[in-house]
Structure formats: structure tokens, C-alpha cells
Figure 1 (cartoon, rainbow, N blue to C red):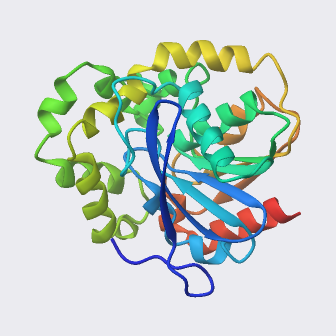
Figure 2: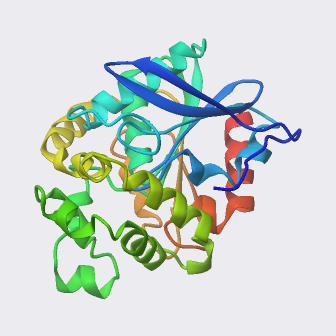
Figure 3: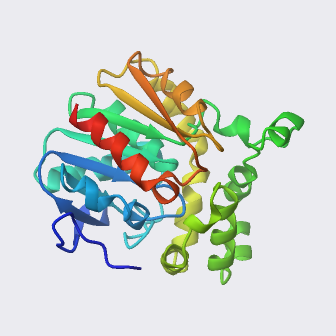
Length: 293
């Protein structure tokens, strides 16, 4: 992992908070209104390291390691969207903030939606990037079908990670090879997944219990479907920005949020699935414009 600094050259601040029955590792940087950034699979707070310096000029940036990921603890349960949303909301409480903005990518976007749905009066704005929600497309894109294969959207891993025990048995000891290959295949620019990223996510995913924790997110699909269907019955009151990668989920990210909100904007970047690694300058500009307007 490379050192990460705020806009004024100060190292990011690491912290741990014992909340909601687990212990969450997080970093903060900057000052001002709080902006929570939530990573996806198999990542950690370090996913955001290329945009933290610029964002810290405008916000108190809060980057948690989701339960089970990074250097957070890995309890045996609680990997559904609602529980993880409570983890992060309690972290914001722990840091002394009431209202806040939240942005997520991949599964982090699902968790960000959950936070907004459960705390509609606290979340000022929501950014939902490059994700499909359980109950609204995730399972459909995981099917082996002619259409999914032709469109390059066959998410085979959704079903594979859902199977108990087998993914852990096959990937353990091969974390660096597996994750780097998988993530690079989802990018438009594989070079964006640099060795420091591979090393960091291989380190954290090879810790005791880490692979199990990562896959428990997928094994919570049936619970998550019930949650998203229920949350979709109430419209979100805050502005929503959806961000898609032209060469991966793209405009479908906007379609996801139209199930929940009537106030949805859309931005698209010329890249693959890892927006903050492939197009950091463009992403930080979009987020600053949205959360400061």
C-alpha cells in the first residue's frame, strides 16, 4: 500500500470503532461536510486512495472498511445490506456527524442505498455507481444466457460466490492471482489495477475468515431481495447521482435508482468497472460538483 495524504499533505487518519457488534476500521481526511465513501468487493478503503486528496479539499472524507473487509473485524453474520448500513451509520454517529453525503461503488453502492433508505432525513445526497441491486437485476445478469454472453454482462461470480465453502477452498492461497485476474477482466484499462492494489487486497482477503466474510455478502442475497423490494415502496427524498462505466454496467445504474427515486441524474465515464482507479480525475470532479451544489 502506498501512503495516502490529504490535499494539504497530511497523512490520512486511521481509526477503529466498536459498533453494532463488530469493530470497523476506517480512515478520514480533510474537513467540512462529511462524505462517506463505500467500497465494493473485494476491496477496502484503499480503493479510494487516488481521489481522497482532491475530495479532502471540500469534505471530511470518511472511508470505512465494510465489516469483513480490509482491516475491519470479520464476524460470522451480519453481511446483509441492512446490517452493513447500520454499521456505517453508527460509524458516522461515532465521528460526531448528523447529516452526511454517501457515495458507493459496486456493492458499496448497494450499502449506500441501504443507508439512504433507512436514514432518509440524514442522508443529504446519494451517489450510486456501477452496481446492480439484488431483486432488480443482480440475479438476472448472473444467468448463463445467450443475451448476457453476447452483451458481455455474464456475472458468473454471483452464483459461484453464493455456494457455501467451495469458493474459499479453491481461492485460498491464490488470492493475488484470483482477484487481480477477476478485477482486471472487469476493467477497460487493466493497468489501472496496479500492484499496490493487488497486494493490499490479497493481504486483507487472505486474513483468517476474510474470504468467508466476502462471500457472505453474496450469500445474503435472499435477505437483500426482501429488503430492496420493501425499500422500493418509499421514494427517496434526497437527490441521487448515478454513475456508470461505459464498458460495464453503464446506464443500467440509472435504471436501478429509478425504482427508488424520481430525482436521478446520470453521469458516464469511459472506463470499466473500477471507476476510482481507471478515471480518478473525472470521478472526483463529478462527485465534487454533485455534493457541493
